[in-house]
Image (cartoon, rainbow, N blue to C red; front, top):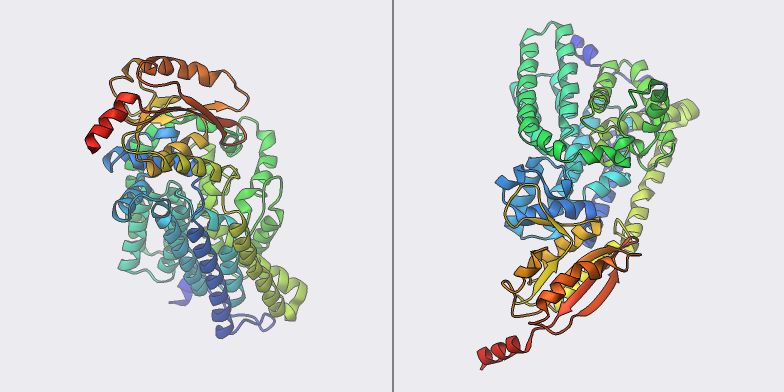
Length: 548
């Protein structure tokens, strides 16, 4: 690397005598501890296999009902997910069988690789004390761990973002054909597996263009243009063909509290400063932990301190690269295309930036407060951080589920499925056709628990599943076994279930004895009411004759 390249990148600068560094062996030992704790926590959480919560099952039922091609169409339950992520899930379940852990396998792998990528990035481009704290922050943080054990694309967002940052820094340090090919492939493929990858790709592309223009490096300026065109073309095809259609189908998302507060109030400029403050002190900055209502203020302070340290240690180019995805994220939110802040899940692409800035900021604060004893402060800080996975493991063992009501749904469906046979029929009364127009594709509504019931019914029950068939047709599709009518109603509603079931009870009256009725609470708002019709006498006689 030439001196000019090193200065332009602002990479590893000599450490001043007043700022002692950790020895290589110490760095390796601390990193090994953090990685081991992360892997242990990850293995425990994956092994416990928590009940899939509503957000996961609303996406997973699409894989139960469709093949690869149909996953390109608008998804049931108004879900949004990159088609490439869905294809990975489809391929995994076809090879390993359809199960919760098969669905969550790729998110777990992506989260694990993302930690490895950040280790490599930190070791190659940060100073020793910064390395251990940056990696430590990601290794012990709650949200990356949680989202890498869910059937959602958020851990893929983190992996793509970290990989792009690493490759961008490597190209700026020493551009090679293979590094350009790798970055371009990540940009092209990333658009199909991670919606916000285009924000990171755009930031990286602009940063590389400025870097190489300033160096007068025409060859790499041309390579940057090729990378940008290829990535934008891939994102454009995906957006026009897939994403825009789905966003049109899911306009209600923008009215949800989670999303409404995630777009800057451009029509009310006076609110913008407070919105920015809340955005950067809320869940998007919850590393290693934090929350809304300014609960992540300390992380923001550390990130600011980290930015100042990078600026003052001649690493300004790296600082601009880290901030670029956030800048593009704000542009995307201003255009109403992707939420900014609001939740940690949609901001996983910003995790590498936040962890790097906060980790560097920790070193800055320790060096300012403890001066020559700053290394001792690093050891103590690492020790405190190392306790967080232990608490995380204990909490996961005690209650690994996202919602307290989640286990009740799986227990209820599992108990019903244990008594079911292939001759039975489960009829969901509150259903609607999916908006693809595919024959026979229905979805239950109208709560996340309803999607859980649909998912686990398909997953666990051998019975035939029917969705709101016309009552008059019930006799045409009448099974030889039991018929179960399932209807979701609000807990305080005492009339709706009977009203919805009445035409089916009447249609079945001449073929079946009166049903038994069981009402089970599912969550704080909804109950599942089950009308069970036993097989009629003629069905039993026919079955006995077959046995004889």
